[in-house]
Image 1: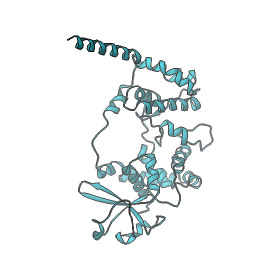
Image 2 (image 1 turned 135 degrees about the vertical axis):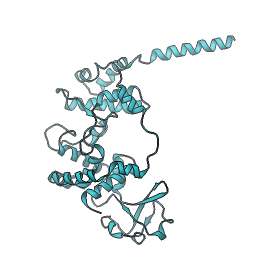
Image 3 (image 1 turned 45 degrees about the vertical axis):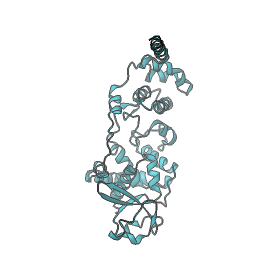
Image 4 (image 1 turned 180 degrees about the horizontal axis):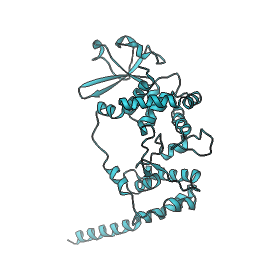
Length: 320
């Protein structure tokens, strides 16, 4: 009994000591974070304008974070959510509308205009929905109360640095998704600092409103991760019945296995094609992929995402 009492006592002491070391609440945590924020190159002015007034976490952000779906969506469902006739038509119209800007950016970064427009369409429906959250507040909430505190804390510091460099003398607020992605291309703060471009030379990197900056930033991101003009991305293909059971991923196949080899004309080496097999319930879908497919995955590390971006780009351009 004495042993049990001592253990209980020790647990209480440890709990009390640990609790004393932890910030008692959100506002206290922000106050204790201030020295680190200032050391990061952020001014007292920016800290005061963006964080000092916050008293509690953003409950809507936490609700969205904690209620992310855990089930696996099928490829067909994902495809149908992201590609439809309305989005394809709007993509075609916008490709034509911004042809001059996109052609200029293509000449500089080598990224095909239809890929830029496709990513723009998938990320924010061509800028129509960028999120309506205060990015700094959302990231502060997630840095304080999420399963990825260190990741979101780093993004919080970077978001403050962005504000410091671009907006500290304005009344602007960084607006984006609940997870901190910003602008029409949905850049996280770290990506903004590394890849966003002031292409229109107005001394503001504006990925919210300037189509020059939006398109150039997407292109610069891809180019910086290895995009090559001579390489393609992906296209869905039909495989001859005799070969379907023999196909494996990560093996190059001769064009003779495809029902319509003409769809591979854009590939750098169309005689040896790598296949991505997507299992959708009992049905299999086959995609021929080129090297830029992996570069699109740098934007979002998902096969589904990269295939959807590629397919929407193809449909926007009437490639296939």
